[in-house]
Length: 237
Image (cartoon, rainbow, N blue to C red; front, side, top):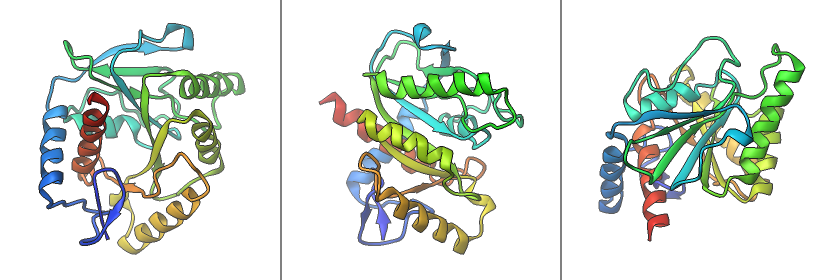
């Protein structure tokens, strides 16, 4: 099977790992995605609480995941700007909702969410981050999609499933994105994709297929950009 830009399978080459697309419609979306993320993306806002969120404008796409899953690295790879989102080898460092936008453009925002599931942080801090994440997912009308990042080496954990439950209740579409696939052997990756897709069958708001990416090798970035361009195009009609 090959995967369309919305993450759904279609007959042909298996693109769940390399995501090479050949259809003319896909080619147009790939180019639209390239242009979308070739723009001058910049940090615009940091919100430590729901009360401090920026005014809603355009569409927002959020990236959620366990601490140290690679959210910031993925955003940097998508935008081609290594220093845009702050990366750290220390889990739990991102404690706010971080917003990125292109100056002068209000069509799309990217949101880097606090990493969840960091056991070594104080319980009160973990509770605060968790509350922020859940309230944002449930109450942000401009939130068009959430990409839930999962480390390909480890797969879905209980804390991920809790967030998926929140997303199911929020009526926001979401999709699982496996990260760090360059650190997993091909056979193991295929098994991880299959088991993750099987788990998603129980979640009504989830896309049924999984995107496999690597920020280091840029695997999957072309398709992810195209998927966002498609979403923006559909919501602009």
